[in-house]
Picture 1 (tube, one colour):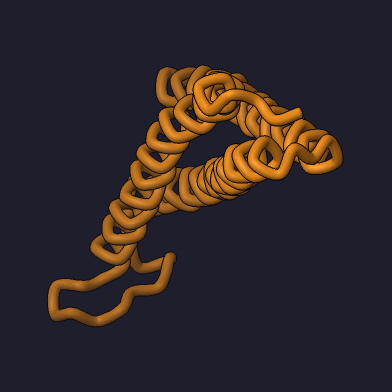
Picture 2: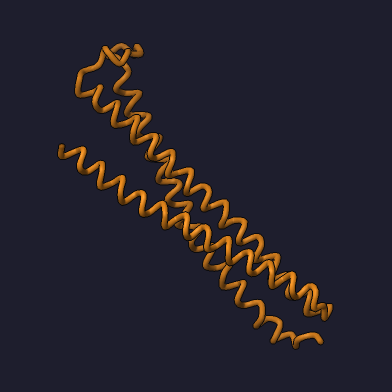
Length: 163
């Protein structure tokens, strides 16, 4: 038996709320990803500046001051850490894009299932909503793991600067 049109729209609200949640999380994730990309670019530019002589020649690591050599080691470490973090953010963003896609397809399928009065399509739509919710959860867990890792790395960097 088909739902009344307003009932069908009401049923579609849960996955639409998940799409909205995913989109908000995606915006934050892409912002973090962009910040890491910018940080990596700045660090590499600083490295190039240190490794360039007064006449534009490329210097070897043994040709720079001891302070610059130490800074190069720090830059290399920070670039590696930032690349690792940016990969996590990229993976979270891809998962969120997939969650949004699956949830939008589920919303469309809910409307089709209602119009066709198809219980089979309704169950497929339910399965898609559940898959989208699981993908959203996976992205959130990945982001939380990233935040815990960032806190530990920041604490380690602060200790290295003091020591």
